[in-house]
Length: 399
Ligand code: FES
Ligand SMILES: [Fe+2]
Figure (cartoon, helix red, strand yellow):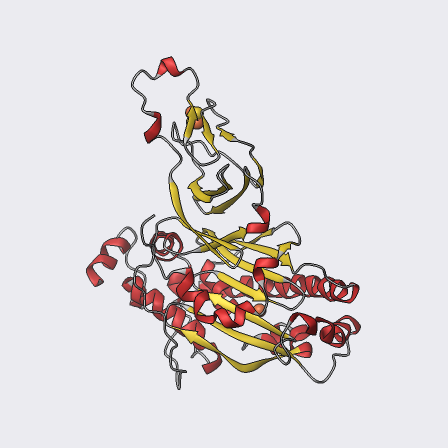
């Protein structure tokens, strides 16, 4: 396998004393730009697609859909986990959906070509129809795969900062949550948000909206001083329970129960939520009682798929399970609030003549994300959208 790390230097960024301007609003509604963003950010990124606990036996597979691309991750009979484009080599039929066990082989639902679970071509239907076929050249096309402490990542085009450089930079923090022990909790949920993908991602990255946008979170937790932003396009931070209990019974109950998770952590290291935001689209959330992945996947210029996957630490006590149930309900509540907020912003971004205001220091992660967009796609520095049909050309000119 080739080296998928394009030598992106990942190092802590100095904290901002002031932040510059956000992206111009035309960038939230431009089809031609979305094409460039998809190539620059999504195809060249490591996407978390699942966990090794879903791939225990040969033939176990998971699929991951990202706009027009789809990937299969499957454990072969040699026990190796591999990732392939989810496309038949004959005439591009999508092969598998969801997750499950394909047994020893994957059969194409169109003309029935079959592939071993290690991706090699097993059989061509009516082989006499293909006098010159060389089966050894027609296996499924392999793409990059990495397993990091049980989390499974794929990379369709092979660019971007490596998982080792991003999550690895905070490995000590992640290790405390022992993610390799996780088991699936709920089936992933999928929601369509009527917004540009960047609005969902901007919103995920800043905590400035919490007091007004998420009163439940504001009553329960406060962000701590710990946490760093890195140049490779990611940041992390912690939330700790407020000393003052919430007046809302479920929220208070969660706060009260928190000490029951102490046995999972070295003294003084638990009772916190660790959240990582990994450009362009992954919120990676370690709670003492569960793990959640918030994934933003474009479907169109103002349509975005939000995928939420949850996993559980093993052997939870009754009290830990109670916390987990409260937390799942809380994640739903917060997510609904974010959907409403972000869709309301989308309805504002196309307002004629509107002039945006400044970003807060607490929104510096939004600013640094926007700086990355401007760096990778220079046409986004223009105050106005280029004329229809000229954006790609203009972007090349500005490079
Ligand atoms: S497209 Fe798969 S067998 Fe024809
Ligand atoms: Fe939010």
